[in-house]
Structure formats: structure tokens, C-alpha cells
Image (tube, rainbow, N blue to C red; front, side):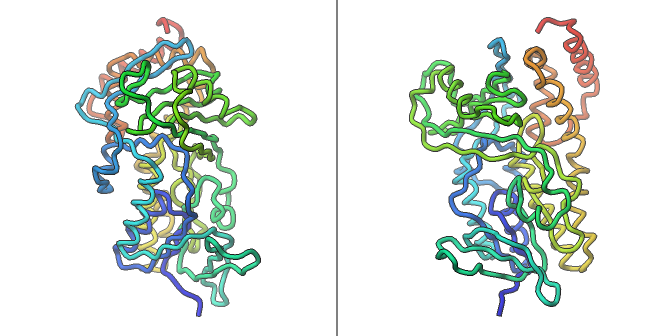
Amino acid sequence: MTETFDVVVVGGGPSGATAAHDLARQGRSVLLLDKAGRIKPCGGAIPPRLIRDFDIPAHLICARITSARMIAPSDKEVDMPIDTGGYVGMVDRDVFDEFLRARAAEAGATRRTGSFETLGRDADGTATVAYRPKGAPDGAPPEVVRARMVIGADGARSQVGKQAVPGAEKVPCVFAYHEIVEAPPPGTPRYDATRCDVFYQGKLSPDFYAWIFPHGKTVSIGTGSMHKGFALRGSVGELRAKVGLDGVRTIRREGAPIPLKPLKRWDNGRDVLLAGDAAGVVAPASGEGIYYAMLGGRLAADAAAEFLKTGDAKALGLARKRFMKQHGRVFLVLGIMQYFWYSSDKRRERFVSICQDKDVQSLTWQSYMNKELVRRDPLAHVKIFFKDLAHLFGLVRA
């Protein structure tokens, strides 16, 4: 007889692994299906809020970042120290993601390695998931399991989404590429193991940014763009040469699409729900995705639990509703910011200049670290608004 699970989670990244973990802890039968060896290109930054909310152990933090450096098209540098004494944690996605999958299995989820193929229906209308196990011989039929519901956490161009959720194939994406390299020795010029460097330069990315993010023994050097034909690998090579990291050993190279806009719909109104990149929850402008992916996985698990308990498919819509209530305004603001400030080098120069302001730095770090808009200092917001206008109209030198 075909196996039946309460939930089949397709995709074992931070979102899918979190959803599987939360549901398994509630006693639900969960299958976590994931491809082996797939590592998403990612700067690897996680804020303190994530570490607290998702019980991330200290041994997974491979570096502690205490400042950021913004580099303008003119090569002007603006340092943004974290003045609260806190830090941003850095993780290696290969180690971090596997920890999350193993934790889900320890909670009771069934893990399987394979590639999702199709969603179908049994004679009684129950969803079926067909997948090809890793190592299956050519021509062998796919394995099939039944599911009371399916969570698609299989990335920006989700196959689950394309087959089940209207509009899922239309999510706009930045294509990201990075190279993981050996960290240079201490004292190397232009490199600080406690600082993230962000390059707002059109030659390195015409519509996004390039980065150098320390990971302890390794470094992530990458860039992203929506422009078809832009040479991402050439851009990273140019950046490495620019900062003197072209001679260090390259460990691996990775590329993948990253969505920059939440889908208008995350479920099919019946028994399929999307989460993480599949739902489009990567922050515009910053490209931050790990926290939002894990929150999306948790909210998907909550919605799935409600659906399994009541049988009411309307419960699936709670995941998106709750996410957008918490973070919809932030995504809107960041989307506008990316559209405007990243559109030309002249504007990028002014954007970096704005980052010199201490009020901007303080509110930026507070919002990022705690994942909520800062409302306790309205005067600072007013000051920043007028300073932004001054930069926008050229009343302040960039």
C-alpha cells in the first residue's frame, strides 16, 4: 500500500526543515524530501532574532560580524559599526542546512533524498507526491507517497508552486552567484574578519550589490542581478582582484535565482502551501532570506496544523496573512528603496552617503537585528526623512 503522511515537505532548506521540525514535534507524520548536495549561494548572515527564536546553537556561528562597510561607485567607504555591543552571526549554509534537517529528523520527521517530480491525486482525491530517489536507475518508475497536505519549500522557481499554485511561476528574481574561498591570513589589507563589505557599484551589479562576507575559515564573495547577460562570474573575479583576494584558493562556486517579491498567493485553496523562497519571501534591497525563510516555514507549519485539525482549507491562507502583517511594510519600503537607489551610480553614491548618518545607522541596525520597524524614536525618523530629501535633491554633497 502507498505510504500516507499528514504532510510531505518538498525541499530541505531552512524553510522546509523548519516546517518539518515544527510539525513533527506536534506528533504529525511528516516526510521531508530533499535533494542532496544542493547549497544555495548565500551571504550566510543571521540576525540575533533568528538565533533566539529558532534555538540556533553557538557552534554553528562561524563568524561574528560587528560592522558593515558600504562602498560607493567612487570607492568612497562608509563604516557602520553595531553600536549596541551585539553582532550578526554568520553561518555556512552546507553545515547550517544539514543541522536543520537532522533536527527535524530527531523530532520525528522521515527524511528521504530525492528529486520531486509531480503532484497528483489518488482515486479519493488525496494528494500524491511522485519523486525519484537519489541513485535510482535510469528508467525506474518514481516512488509515490500520499499526503493530506503538501508544503512546497523547493526554492525560487518552485516546481510544486508551478504545478499547484496560480501565479507561482511569475515571481521576479535576482540571479545570485558567489564563490566560497579560503580566508586570507590576518593582517591582509582591505579585509576584516569581523566586517561585511557591501559594494554598491554598477560595474559589479547594475541593479543589486556585490559582497564580501567573512565565514571564519572561509569567505563568501558574490553578486547578483536581474539583467540577463550580465557576467556574474566576471564581476566576482573583478571584485576579488580589486581587493586582493584573487590569489586565495576557491573552494566552491554556486549560483541560483533569488526571489525579491512575495507571491500574492501561497496556497492552492485545497491542500498545498508554499514557504520560503517558493513563496517569494526574500527581502528586496538587502537580499536577506534565512530569517524570513525560517519564519515562513514556521507559519506554514502553524497553518498546516490548523488545516489538519479542522479540515478547513481557509486555514492555509493564514501563513501569508500572518507573514505580511508582520513584515509586509518592511518589504514594501525595501522594494521602493531598491527600485530607486540602485537604479544608477549617481543614486548609489548618494545612498552610501546617507549611510554616514548616525541616526540612519542606529535605526538600520535596530530594525535588522530585531526584525521589526523601530518606532520608539519618532524624531529620528523625521530627521532621516528630511536628510533623505536633501540627498535626493542634491542639497548635500555625496
